[in-house]
Image 1 (cartoon, rainbow, N blue to C red):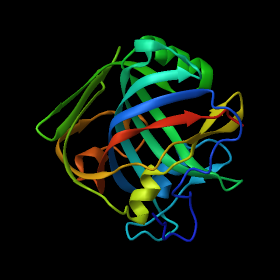
Image 2 (tube, rainbow, N blue to C red; image 1 turned 45 degrees about the horizontal axis):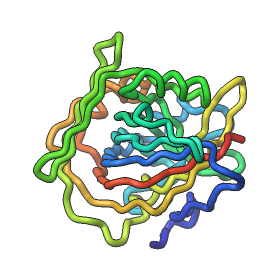
Image 3 (cartoon, one colour; image 1 turned 45 degrees about the vertical axis):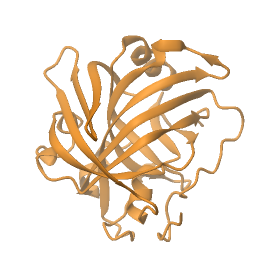
Length: 249
């Protein structure tokens, strides 16, 4: 796999320095993305970061960035070598945008993360400062389709997503690599922006198409209202990877 972009995150994880503090299997991952101008994302980012940019043709145009609605199942969560058992198995739907910091580290910023179990929701908020919210969430697979449904507790916010899985991608494009090969997250906490690195094998990717989509999370996160009524610019599926996170720095 190669990356045609002159700049950006490498297509293969650079590897963690030191022992990972948490390991998780991410399964049946659906990536739905919309192209937006950097002005829609920049005000939402933590200090020291800016929108990471890439045009639809795979070259950096300096003005195009991306909003992602990502749905998947967590399985086999471990704090190596200890497994937390079934408490670490749940569905998550998150809203993320793409960032680069002043050190040139490319990652993501999570604007919201809705998880289907209370204990992991509270634990992740305390441990990392990520904006996790507790939700009712479920996933179903049938006839070559993968569907997710969630409702955030205490609100009317919902996300309903059903996609049809299509052909595998033998060689991802520069854009498909940009949207999936992200080796860390930028998190603002205690007045400082930290970069939490991660590593995993290369994504086995499939193209996919939307059967139905209704989402309130992207608008609630401060992004343009009505964005999710537009046809997505990219829809991908992966059976999953096992991810390991290092400590934030």
